[in-house]
Image 1 (cartoon, helix red, strand yellow):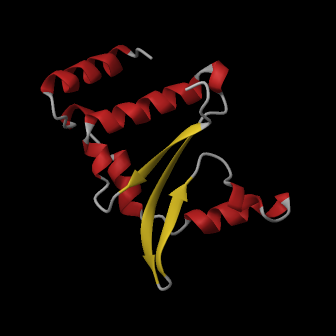
Image 2 (cartoon, rainbow, N blue to C red; image 1 turned 60 degrees about the vertical axis):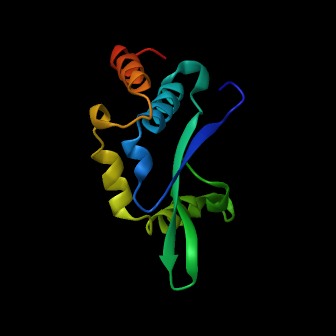
Amino acid sequence: MALCVGTVSVLDAGAMCYGRVWCVFEIWVSLMASESESSSSYAYDVYTCHDTSQGLTAVGLTDGFAAVDKHRSKVYWRDDKHRREESFPLAMAGAALSLRLEAGEASRDGDRRAILNLISRGDR
């Protein structure tokens, strides 16, 4: 991850990644990387499609400001970020906040158990 600046989760309509133990593991690794002193600028962002009157549009929650938030003077960055993020579907955020890692699914039960054990120990 030394060459990365962050991780992006792209959610489908059912936010299925929050029910898959491998996907949650990738999110956990990303969040742990953002906490480490050597990677303090590591970001985790979430994007999905949102149906608007203009058709499908990508909408995301970003860790910090996105490049599009910075197209005007710095004094407007927070307003632009808020405007961009306010249409993010709350159900998607709710899916993330209500995930139960121990109920996460995997194709192989051995992988599931190994990931759960690794996370419970706090290994990075």
